[in-house]
Amino acid sequence: MKKGFVFDLDGVITDTAKYHYIAWKELAAEIGIDIDLKFNEQLKGISRMDSLERILSLGNKNDAYTEIEKEALATKKNTQYVQLLQSLTPDDLLPGVKEFLDQAKEKNIPCGIASASKNAPFILDKLGVMSDFDAIVDPATLKKGKPDPEIFVQAALALGIDPAEAIGFEDAQAGIDGIKAAGMYAVGVYSGEELHGADIIVEKLTELNIDELLSK
Ligand code: B16
Ligand code: MG
Image: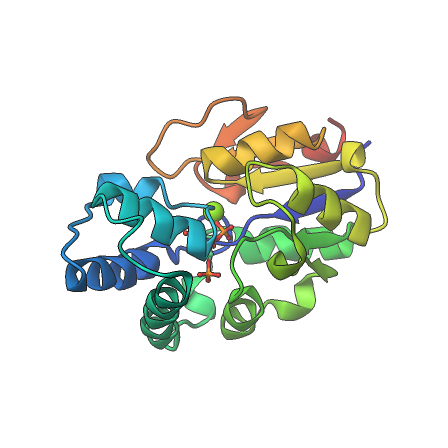
């Protein structure tokens, strides 16, 4: 029997990828780099600074900026991103999420967040689901980002369970790889890109039977 759920945020609880894309596209354009939606797929689940490095690398500009200038570029993108997040409301929860969290609460199954986003607490607050989570990993405390299993292991331990007793939900390949490396059962939430290695793939959480899932 599994004893807890660990959720990625962007792409599983809500779709903030579109806002990340708008903000990165604008920032990239300012420094002469054009990114498209296909490239944006690579940025899912990847930290802010790693995302910037991938964009600079696309434009062959990794060595064009000092670390301080890179920090400034990332901060500029984040300011624009946070501006876009202001309009989030509980209506922006992905289908079936609130119902799933309510069922978990009824069954006393703890839920945690394993998101690479430093904006996760703000986003959860805007979505009105902050109190539905028993633990939120602070990505600033991590040595390595996804696909390293560290964030998922930390989330399970914060819920008071062994990673092998946890079920992880992810929409990005880096996240599925991290969940599996942590020894957890992986639910892939399909977002248009192929996901490899997930134990089950759904488009919406409404497709899942919570009791069946816990028996895995
Ligand atoms: P921030 P997740 C990730 O969220 C996003 O998928 C990724 O695109 C973003 O770069 C990362 O958070 C960091 O976000 O700039 O807000 O700290 O999918 O891990 O919930
Ligand atoms: Mg995600």
